[in-house]
Image: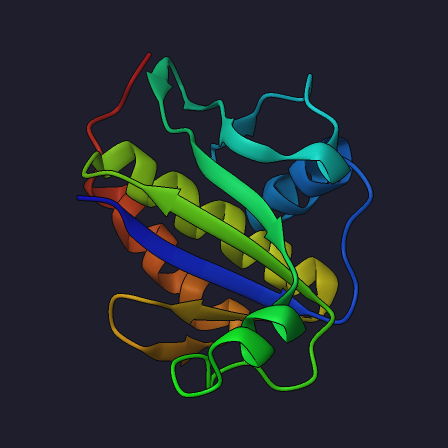
Length: 142
């Protein structure tokens, strides 16, 4: 079963390196694969927590198109211009990776997070708090 989380914002970062800097500033031990072009992200993005895989799928979607296509379902979209969609499976490392990457991205872009599982809108602070909890529960990888 895969889960989804969205970051909605009015601006976006320009590179994986800029995103990694935001993650580092948050203090998370998550390292994104900087070999991909940020604007071309469309699928799996490798990431690591120490030696453990913590990657996830990530895509750029148009939130206004989502709102037009399914206005009854997509009531969380307001006037945001950018939506970064995250998907992951059941791995604890992936769960940490998504929440760490999403919280840092949301903070860096002045955006917010929508958790599709709970239907909850979250601030970058609340998302980062969950990421820190998930990180603390992970077994330490070399």
